[in-house]
Length: 348
Ligand SMILES: [Zn+2]
Image 1 (cartoon, rainbow, N blue to C red):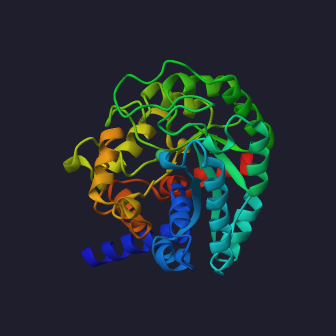
Image 2 (tube, rainbow, N blue to C red):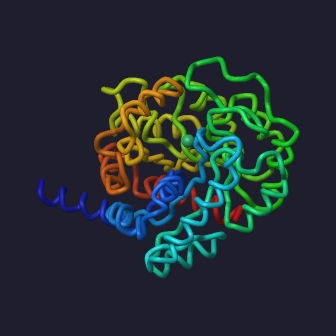
C-alpha cells in the first residue's frame, strides 16, 4: 500500500515536471560576460542543471555591477546581450525568444527559451531611445532599479525602513509608459515603496515582481508588504518567489519556508498570481573571494541559500515539497509555469 502511494507521488512529480518550469530571474548574462574568453559556457556549465530541473523558460537578466558604472554600463550591457546570443547560437538546445509565440515554438522544438530582462536601467542612462534599441535586441521585461538610485527611480533597501521616499523621476514615468506601449513587461522587483505605488498609477498592463519575498517572513523594503501583494493581485500581475531572501536567519532558510512564502501570497490573493523567480546566485557568490562576499554582506545582506534549492537541478525538490504540502496539481502547474505563461500571452 505504502509502495503504491509512493509510486503515485513519483508519477505526479514526474508529470508536473514534464510540463516545464518558468524561472523569471536568473543572473546568467553577467556570468557569461565575465567568462567571455571561454566558449560553450552555457552548454557545459548551465545546460545539465536546466535539463535536470525541467526548466523551459528563463528570464535572463542584464545586470551591471557597480564597478562598471557610470561609464561602461551601456557597453557591458551590450556585451552581455552579445554573449547570450553567441552562446545560444552555439547550441541546439536554446533559443532567445521575443514573443509568446516564439516561446511556444521553442518549447515544441524541445529548446530552453531565454527571455531577456533588464534589472536596473543604468544601461539606458536617461535616454528613452535606448529603450527602443534594447527592445529590438529582445529585452521584454524591465525593472527600473536594483537596490541603488538611478535616472528612473530609487531601489528598496535591505532594511525595514529608510529607502528614499521619492517615487519615479520624469524619465522613470516615461519609461513605464513606453514599456506599456511597446509590450515590455514592467517588473517591480527591488523598487522602493514610493516607486512601486507610482508605477501602478501609470502602467495599464499586469505588473510583475519577478523575484521577491514577502515582508511577513523577511521584513526589508527590498521585499513586498501585504498591501503591495494585494495591489499585484488586483491587477492580475504575478509575483515570482525568490529563493535567497526567504529569511534573515540561516537556520530558517529552508525549502519549507520557501513554500511558506507561496502559501502566504496565496492566502492574500489566491493562486493566480504566484510564480517562480528563483534568483539562483550561489554559482556566482561561490566564485567570489571572501573579501567580495563581505562587501556584499555590508552593502546588502548575507544571502542564505536553501540547501535543497541552490540551482536549477533542484527544481524537482520544490515540486515534491508542493505535493507534500498538499497543493493540487492544478495549483502546482500555475505556480511552476501557468501564471507566467498567462502574462507572456497577454503582454508579449
Ligand atoms: Zn535582484
